[in-house]
Each structure stands twice: as C-alpha cells, then as structure tokens.
Image 1: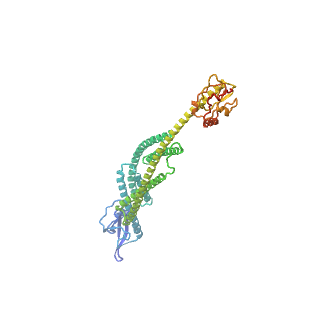
Image 2: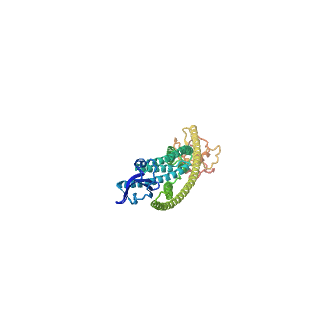
Image 3: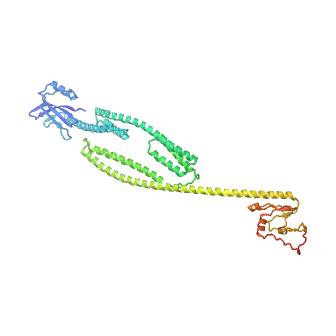
Length: 500
C-alpha cells in the first residue's frame, strides 16, 4: 500500500485542453492528502520519469514551481480529482481512495494502541509487586495486536514498535514474579511449620486421650480457618488438609472415649461454610465488575474513541453501576446472615462446653460413689470371710474333741441357769434339744445370711456331746422364739433326772 500516486490528467474543455501531471501524497496520521499539478509543457521528460519512478516509490525529489497546489481532508464522499480534471484511469483513483481510507483507519488503530501501551507502561513501572491482572491484560492486548496484524489492519513496522514496548513490560513482570515466588516460598514454609506444629500437638493429645471431642473439633476447625488466610504451596496445603481430615475422623471414631457433648447434628457449621463460599464468589464478581467499570472510565477519556463508542461505554457503565449496587446489597445481607450464624454456633459450642464440664463433674462424682461402694463391699466380704474362718475353726475343734458322741445342738443362748449343787446329779436339758433332735453324724454349715454377730459368739465349753451348728432357717427360728425355759430349782419338785 503506497501513499503516493502520479496521475496524467486533462484540463479544460474540448475546445481548449491541456495535459498535466497530478502528484498525490497521503498523510494518514492527519487524514489529509496534498496534490501538486505540473503542466506537461512546463516540465521536461527527465522530471516526469523521476516523478513516476523515484518519488512515487518513496525517494526524495525537488519539485519545480507547481501550476497548482492544494490540500484536502480525506472523506468517504469526497472525490480525489479536481472538478476540472479528467483521467483515462479512473480505476486508479478509486483504488487509491479505498486504500487511503483503510490506511487512515489503520493509523487511528495504531494511535489507539500506542495510547494503551503508554498507559500500561506507566502502571507497570509503578508496580511494587507482581500483578497477575497486569500480566493477563498484557497478554490479551498482544493477542489483539497479532490478530490485527494477521488481518493486515496494521503495518508490520507498527506492530514491531508495539511489540518492543510490550516485551519490556513482560520482562519487568517476570522479574517481579520471580521475586514474589521467592517470598511466597519463604512465607509458605513459615506458615506450614506453624500449622504443622499446632496440628502435631492436637494429633498427639488425641492419641493420648488428653483432649475431649468438643475441644478437638474446635481446634481443628480453627486450623482450617487459619489455612484459608495464609499462603501455602499446593502440595503443603493438600498435605495439611489430609491430616486434618484424618484427625476429624479419628475424633469421631472415638465414640464413648469420654463425655460426648458434641451435638449429633450441627445446623450451623455447614451453612456457615457454604455461605462463606458464596460470599467469596460474590466478592470476586464485584471486584471483576469494578475493574470493568474502571476500564470504561478510562476509555471515556480516550481521544481515539468515536462518539458512538463513548455512548456505548456510558450505557455499559450505567448497567455495571446498577449491577454492582445490587450485588453490594446482597453481599451485605449475606455477611449479616453469616455473622448471625457464627454467633449462634459460638453460643451452641459454649453451651456444649458447659454441658461437657457438668457431665465430666457428674461422672467423677459417680465414679467416686462407685469406688466407695466397692470399698464397703470389700470390707463386708472380709468380715464375712473372718466369720466363716472362725466357724470353720470351731467346727474342726469340735470334731477333734468328741468324735462319735451324741451331738449337741448349738442355738442362741438364753438366760444362764443357776448351777446345781455339786452333790446333786441333775442336768438341765436345753429346750432346743428336746424339740429338735439331730442325727448323730449331721454337721450343718452356716449359710451366708449369718451376720457379723457371729463374731461375738463365745465358744461354748465342749462336753462329751457333739456340737451341731444350726442352719440358716434354724437360726432365724431361734431368733423369733423366746429364750429357752429354765425350770426353777424347787426342792419339792426337784427330781433326779437321768443323764444322757
């Protein structure tokens, strides 16, 4: 595409005509073209040759005095030829006009790209840290430039000029990114070490049973929340999440390991997590809309934008302002709901902690009562064993003293009878012997209903008769009856009673 044209024209009418040369030069940046008219009678053949070959192809040429010289603005409705001129090649004029119109638009496009490049260079130079948004903006801009170059809407030298500036900005962003990656690695390691230390402590207390389920859940959730606010490498983040998840499962599987005051169904945690995710997304949407709004505001002040483009930007800006306002209202409602749920959850957890403490205190009291009851039971068992050992020793002593003698029934003692004179051969027979004779070889063991009173029973002096221990039923019956009757010693009624 050339910005110069040499055309042979005819001036005048049929009665008086002259031949002349028109030399056109297009200046796309100004959207104007200039032409010079040279009469063939005023110039020589050498100048005509240089004008057609050298000057038209871009070489400099010193012009002689022109017959006419004019400058005009290029318009779609205007004609390149002066009104009094005619040419045998109107197709050259039409093609030149079409190419120059395209050249003007291409020049305007290049100018608008230069404005964008200057704006991005200023913002890039002011950056103190790597900006992913700036990188993405540069990438999208360069894709647009390449597309226009492919369509030949831009000249290659124009694209090269833009490319040089864009590469400088990319180099600066790469340097900033490398510095940020190094800082990120340091921060990530420090955050990982901190969270790993806390998590290891929680895991150890869970393993040793030194933490209850409510406190374990609360501390693990606090670690999850802390991980969302710190910079961590992807691998380190996944590793910590897996360990926290395993700790949650281990706490849940403990079951009856301690007082379980954790609510069986928590209606708040799931809603809080879901609402926090929605709030995060809404904040991202609002931030994106605000960036679009900022770009529209910058575009309004662009000198290369047409009136139609400005009107479209203003309409889109109004729509974005309304969208941002509605989203901000929704975001405020969601944050209020989130804060209410957090307060309710905290109250629930505080109540659960209070119930846990009460249950723990109650469990300790119950355990103490059970320990005291076991201690009393153990003392009673020891007393029983002592009583049984005493009875067993008495039984063995009785067996060794009078083996084969008529056994004597041993019952509950009544009032002691007065002793008979030494010269009288009288014996008092116990009423229990008269009413409940026992077989010669029968020896009855005491049952477990014998109480500690057995320890107070004194050993009865053994006679030639065998001692027969009463059974549990006999002991109960003997306690229910009156003491054995002892006849009074009356000389008138005393008789000699044969001994057994």
